[in-house]
Length: 304
Image 1 (spheres, rainbow, N blue to C red):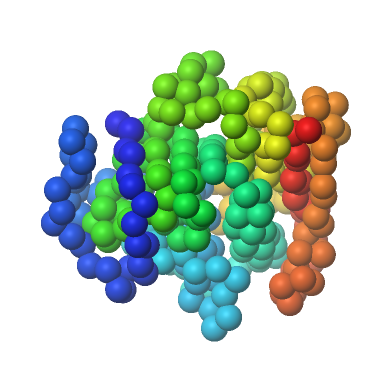
Image 2: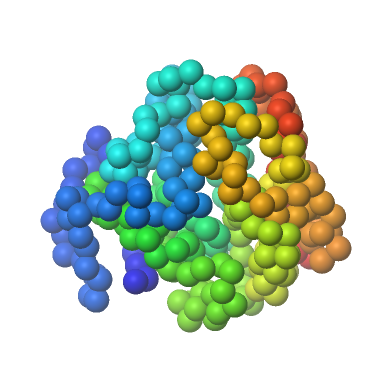
């Protein structure tokens, strides 16, 4: 299923009850009672619920760095554990929570600053930027992820009457399959136009060769003026064991690790680095002490 939606008002959950509007031709919309349980998602896909919990937590703060009005709806619909902060967190969990919060705001700003009308979110998970960011007129945003993830996401968004702020296309695809670029282009993606790419929290779940192949493909699809937002990477061999996190951290494969920037520069990208410490200071946040698996920052890669 591919969902193409016109731009429309994206209101917070509390302000926008479920609607009974007719779905677009050829698209069926399940009711709220048909939302699948989190157990139907793959282990890697379930990590999107942890990201949603962090975004729900931040959205409820007195002065949040962002507001995701649908994050808690995903967590509730999946029957997942409550928001972070409802129970004590270990040192690694605290670090990862703040990392995820700062990362979300940083990528929000970076995507809008890219000033392109074509955006692709790789392994989009439960990302709702299509619905909550003020996109310029004419923006077309593509979300790529596995079919069960997009189906779950679509059901929750539909149940809450969510409407995107841009033209949105949800493309069910496996990024390790070689045919995903052809399918993306078949949905209207134009490799001749500058693109803003987002790979948020993705590469760490890939082997080094898989990460290199994915980034090679992104480079082949990127016209001059394109931007790629991605993390610098971490040495997963130093990941500490912490109760409640092993289900997630055991899935980390490392991607290109700390050499991500070097790889991108060697393959035609110009890199700008933003450290996690600088980002925390910029937003007036206290960063928990670093752990053995700390990610030191974020990369914005430009295609010359």
